Length: 450
Image 1 (cartoon, rainbow, N blue to C red):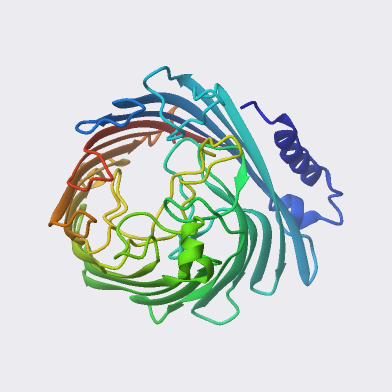
Image 2 (cartoon, rainbow, N blue to C red; image 1 turned 180 degrees about the horizontal axis):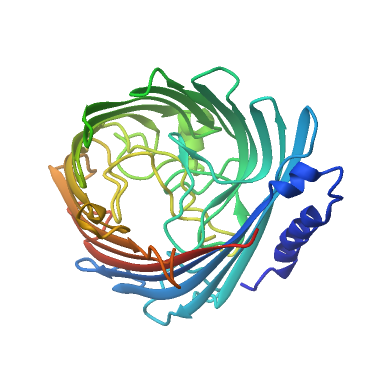
């Protein structure tokens, strides 16, 4: 795999074109433009403690990522036009035989070795009228039915169109269609699938909205359709009850209903690869799932106590977009794996979304600004899943414990530099997974250019 200079230069050229537009006709386009360079230094260590994958017992890699973001303003007039551009570069600082597996963090060369460097770029055209904005091109959605993954050096990006409207007071409406995706450790666009599917789709339709009833209560509904895989409904409620000046109680309720669509709804289609992985009640990968969760958080000063419960129905695993099973013409992984879910149980290692899984979880977090150390936060989380359905039967269980510590320098020469440590311990009885211990060390900084 080689650096794709053409794509990068295209994005940089788009940035330069935006900066050079005539200032008289495009005053707001230029005046409201912003550009940043985000830098992320990332060390990733994943130790397989029990059943060792054939590729090796440990992943240990270190890389440096750069994301150049340019966002223009809009041209003058009733209908305003703008242009955004993004160029991304990843560099391998340390990796080697026995410590690189697939494309967990760094893309693979054709011989399976870690790539020395990789790059990609994207351009987004945008149009605004009144309180409505239309975007087409490079997108990173953050919605209940689709969350762009940003858990490694470079973020996952999508290609498609999206409309966001705030024309009605207190109501935000979103709709769109996505066609392709580039994984966090890839330079190639692929279609979209689900976990363990070997076929893909270029049609992901979505729509929905958030209605703010008042300052305390928000209601949500979204719908998504990945053609030939699934149709998904989401309903959510978020309520924050202020108890006193420095304390509150938050309730977050989420419900997903996901059913088979097109090829996934037929035995022949599933046999061809339009299927999901894991237990599926004898249907060989048919999607049929209801998942709900209740999350409660009590905040007092710098303290935050969270507890909750999640239930996954027992006909199939919970699904959303995931390209991890896709391979190219050489039967090599596209590096498109790595997906985020709008679930509290989507943690450092596990996701707790197996068929039949009932998960109880708790988290304690503290903001040290309360004791005179602004910028320092820490949390510890524990989750336990039981009742997992498995082809072999039995009451399968799993648990995870995560620790997170973050600090952002508040002043001086290194103001804005962020340091993060993530530590996770995951133990599972599921035959399709492995016991794992994981550490991540992250140093990040965003440099404003405009």
